[in-house]
Length: 345
Image (cartoon, rainbow, N blue to C red; front, side):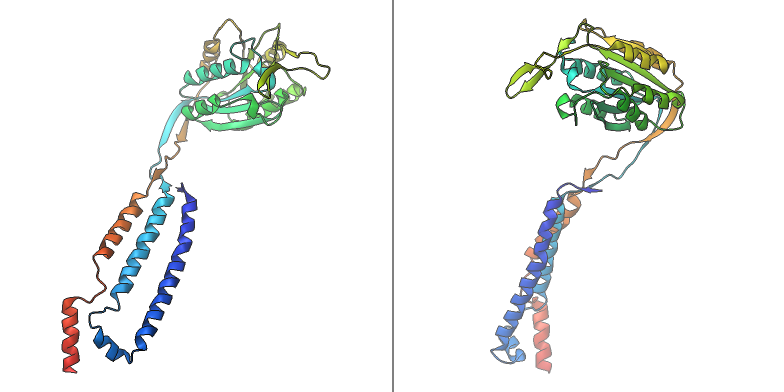
C-alpha cells in the first residue's frame, strides 16, 4: 500500500479543531438558553427543537469531511500478485558513462551508440533477467535483476554522462559491482556484458578478475570507439568546446581494445567492437549466450498500485446527502408523543 498525496492528510488536523469549536458553541448556546429560566419551561417555548438531531448532523458532516480528506490523499494498493515462470539467463549490462564516451568517432556519440546496442540486446533476450549498471569512477546499479524490460529500457534511455557521480574510469570496480548484482551460488547461466572504450584509470582489472575466477560467470566485452581516437566535446557555459588537459592540449581518447579482449578471454566470453561503420555485433553475443545452460526461475511480478479513492469519496457523498435531508426539528410523531406525555404527567 502507498499514499500518493500524503500532504493532504495534514488537513485531518482541522477536524479536532472543528469538534472543539462545535463543543464550545453548543455549550455557549445551552448557557444562553438557561438564562431565560429553568430548562423545562424553556423547552416548552421551543417544543420543536431536537437535542440529538443537530449532533447527528454534525457527526455526519465531520465523517464526510474525514472521508473526503482520505480520498484526496489517494490511498493505493494492489490486490493481485502473479508468479511467472521464465527460462533464461541472468544478465548484467555494464555501461561506461565516463566523459570519454562523449567522443563522436562512433556517431552520434560513443555513449548513444552503446545505449542503442544495449537496447537491441535487451529486445533480443526476452526471457532474460536484466540488471543495468553504469560506471565512471564509481559504479551505480540503475536497476537490480528484473524481467521488466520496459523499465530497464526506460532507465537505459535516461542514462547520461552528466549524471555520473564522479568522472574517471574504473573497470575493476564496475566488474565487481556487476558481480554483486547477479545471484550467488549459481552456475553456467550468468553473464555480464561490459560496454566501454577500454579506458581505465585505476588499474584494478586483474584484481577484479581474480575474484571472478570461481564465479562461473561469462563476461562479454563490447569495445566502442576507434584506434585513431577522437577529441571529447564538453559543455562549457552555453558553448561546446573540446576537452583539454592540464597544459592546454586537446585530449584525444582512443579505443583500448586489448584490455577488453583480455577480460573476455579470461572469462569464456567474446569481444566485439562497435565502429563508425554502423555494424551491429549483437547477434554474435546472442549466439554465444544461446549456448549457455539456461535455468528455469520464478519471478514475482511487481504489483501495480491502483487508486482506491472511490471507496472513500462515495460514502462521503452519501453521508453529506443524508445530512442535507435531516432537519434540526423533531419529527412530527415524536413531537406529538412528547406532548401527550407532558399532558399525562
